[in-house]
Amino acid sequence: QVQLVESGGGLVQAGGSLRLSCAASARTFSTYAMSWFRQAPGKERQFIAAISRSGRTTDYADSVKGRFTISKDNARNTEYLQMNNLKPEDTAVYYCAAKYAAQLERITVDAHSYDYWGRGTQVTVSS
Image (cartoon, rainbow, N blue to C red; front, top):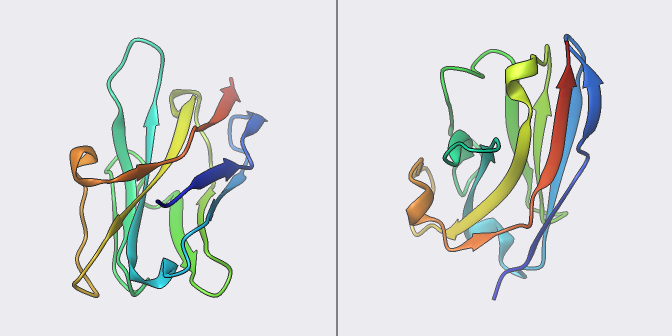
């Protein structure tokens, strides 16, 4: 069982930045593809960013492309989401997700494909 714990959320003004972290308990963290999703009240969980097992391949939702950067540190068992130029519409609970990836560069953007989820961290962007 992989346990994920997000941190780094908070309140920020529009145009500001936050860096989210996702700490994983997995001993074989390097074998997992990771992603970030977010969910605002009354809305479905939305794909934000994903990173391959190797960490070399990434994908982003159009709404955050150019502003957010996903990364993973296999040595620290941690996934990150650097969020720059935040907008009020970025306000949501952000969730870290992980799945075992047999292929080094495989990217998955489907929430249903992910096996492990954190509890989420709130990001609020004021206008």
